[in-house]
Length: 115
Length: 115
DNA sequence: GTAACCGGTTTACTTTTATAAAGTGGTTTC
DNA sequence: GAAACCACTTTATAAAAGTAAACCGGTTAC
Image (cartoon, rainbow over all chains, first blue to last red; front, side):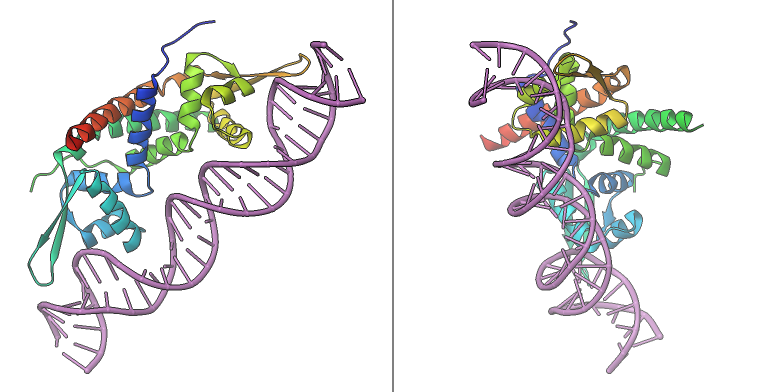
């Protein structure tokens, strides 16, 4: 019976936290869009497509709460609101790239099977 | 206006795939438990705790479908069923560790704020 | 003055996810 | 023969997540 390292409960909590923060249908799409460059509300909505105002607003609030995104209001008329990925938000890049890498391998694997 | 690399739609699909596979309240817990060593249904249930039979069975089926876990039935009486992480399942370790690392940093950050 | 854009919020609804508890068919233990 | 374990499945319900569409106050363009 081979034994590999078991994650401590502290690690498990950290894992839940990370998953929790990434959870939500549009969060990753939002961060990927903002990683390109900062955007306004409607710009984000057009860029992501299919997302409703309600969902975009909800997920942006959650990202803001976790300090992954900043929201800046300018006193133009009509008001301009800019969303930007924080430097802290950028630290998620490694995680996201790992997910992309694994996902790409997974897709290749699936395609091989279908032939 | 600084431009960073934008993820291609292919990468975005891969990202959705990966998130999709990790999605579900107990999936990561199951894989972490099985990473330690293979286990039977009730062993898993006791190890994870709080998970209902229905959920465990559902999530195991999904993991099996994605070939991350194998299910082996032995003709003992009563039947023995063993779940084991596949070598493919083990390739998720990098992803999981990235998530753990980020989560740990995140928790430290939160604690600093609370002082 | 009316249509359209901005950055949302509200309402009403559907879908998905998760829970708790009981049941199933078989086996072993006493 | 009663209780308990195994690996589940079924039923019924509740909570969470997501959607579609209308609405809001304000501003600008025609």
